[in-house]
Length: 103
Image (tube, rainbow, N blue to C red; front, side):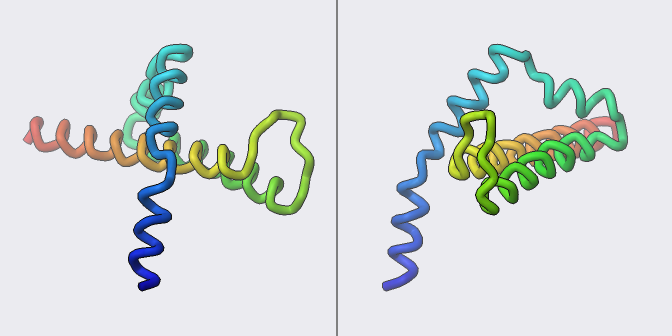
C-alpha cells in the first residue's frame, strides 16, 4: 500500500531534531523570531516570509550543486525551513488569540 509507505516515511522523519534545534537556538539567541515579529506589528508575518525565503534560496543553491562554505545539508535546510513554517504558524495563532481577547 503506497499510503502506508508514505506514512512510514513521515513517521521516520527526525521531527524531534526540529524541536532540539528550536530549543537550542532560543537558548542561544532568545526568542528572536517572536521579538522580531512583534517589532513589525501588523506586518509581523514578513518575519516568517523572510526566513522561509532565505532557506528556500539556500535549498535552491544546494540543489543546483553550489558548494556552501557553511556546513549545511539539504536535509538540514529543509528541517530549518519546516521549523520557520511552524514558528510562523505559532505567531499567527498568538495574534489570533490576542485579537480575540481584545474583542
